[in-house]
Length: 608
Ligand code: F6R
Image 1 (cartoon, rainbow, N blue to C red):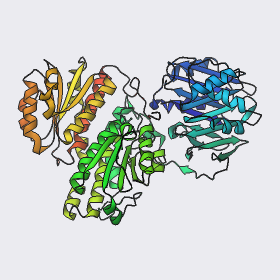
Image 2 (spheres, helix red, strand yellow):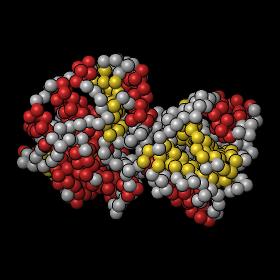
Image 3 (cartoon, rainbow, N blue to C red):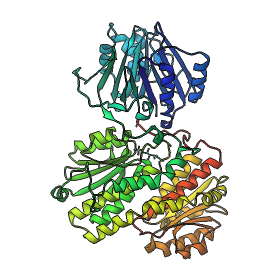
Image 4 (cartoon, rainbow, N blue to C red):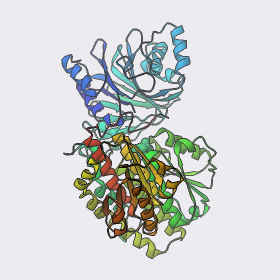
């Protein structure tokens, strides 16, 4: 989704903003632009296409100035075009605005403003903002923005500059992420931390309805009642290196290879010297656990797939039924959440609009909310009662990999901790699972070492239009994740099916050479899976099986087998997803696609 960056200080605003926007490319975009105050006027350069297009235009026609705002746009209202790119201006070009989010009442505002003489040059919802701020601007930019936002419904993170105030930057947030970077005699605003990390590690997280005013080298932050609020400065501890490619062609490949380390970090940082789990930011006591009558796990996309495995873990260890729901369904459905419910939200970014709305829905109904997220200080983390941070580090590639495996591990640790507190497992089982979890990094590494042979398999898939993924139990959920990975980055249509469902319809689609990825890591279901594989094989499928070492039964009925190390059925999903991630990666890279930035997708889905 859109990214915004703003700068005020002594440096070259244009260079700093372009650099910042390049760190937000992962969010997905189709056009980019900047507005720079050149000391006299606001100059704008904006173009459809990649950031390079904008950067090369700015090289040809540099804009000097130390105040500016920039934007990468992911089209929602109006096609990707120069005119629809941000920043947008008011009629006399004295105000420039960048915006991330959606102005829901823009049609009525636009009609009203047109009636009052405003001229619109784009199809965007955003363009109402400069006109609206201009309308209320009586010489005080901060007051004008404060007034304008009270007329707006929807979500926004905005940055505003005015021709008449060369030393002033105003920004505001509601339901779209926004942070401030605090440097030495310079300030930055941005949608995410990587945009400012080259310049400062001191960051302020902006909350909903807060307005930022930077003037005369001072920052003030106000709430919606125009009362100044004290904000804490947060020190970012991770390195910019963690958010760069480090020698890999694509972030996705790098992030797949980081999994042994991040899984290890996620587990080991939660173990005390005795090897027991200590969940720092979760304060649910034994007694409170007893009061929890219903558990929900709610998330979107890949995070939802991790949630399904979380359900398996909690049900197995705590012996309570768990409902898993897709956030966009949960938020509008009759979800039966009440004050005796625990709602677990899973979100890499911590900013996904539907997941955040589900969180608020659950809180309104009195539920306790626990989030599993990767981004410290994200909206979901801040609004939850309890938080479990995955230690995946920044995930830049749009296709989630390391966040997913750390989400599963995190949910397993929560399940273990709750189960031992609730007395539904004994100490021996608890210790045994933890010991085996500590072997996960090594098991994942052994799959990573097979990347070249998986690339060979990928070669056989690049010209296919369809693929199927099959599994039973936990492997079915894994198959869904495997299929999602393939389709989102390789554009091959891929569907996952519970293997037992095949003969109820889907098997009609299998023809000579159809690739079928069969996930068979559950010992108890192996024989059933062998039968299902035989069924598709008999109809001409090209079967790629993923199985545990030693499960030779599957070899006789498959065209290719990717073995994962022998590990318990319970933990196998964390390892078995890795060959599917590698397979999808190679198919996409071999097809010459932009692996990290698949078409139509955004990393952080901050609109509904
Ligand atoms: C797919 C993918 C998405 C996200 C989903 C939720 O690879 O990454 O399906 O999992 O958009 O995002 P978060 O986890 O940030 O809430």
